[in-house]
Image (cartoon, rainbow, N blue to C red; front, top):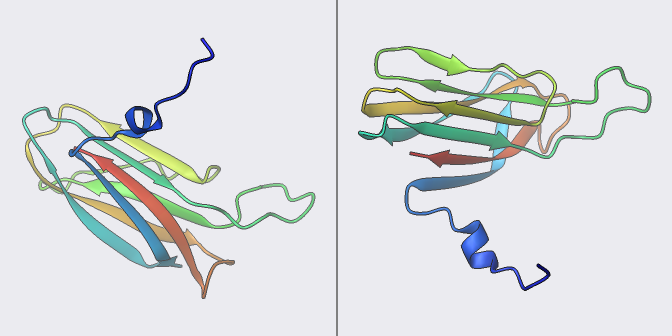
Length: 126
């Protein structure tokens, strides 16, 4: 219908979700790490998003700055996408062993940014 939207209910993420708004960002070749714990569910969802600089008119590729997210398990296994097209990346992992995982954001290409860095937001649901 056309009733009122309960924004509190729509945006409720729950206590198992950690939000990181990194206003400083990452520079070219720099990485920032956040720890996450995977419980008995064996699930971890990580979403990285950032506002990219505008591309030049007629550019073959619209993405200007490129930062990536990866997850490293206690066993050293790396999960990533290395998406070179979008400014939003999501890793939805299942069947994981319980334990500590590192979520890593890395600056891959950062020609334009605030003081040479690309700010980003990260949502981690355990």
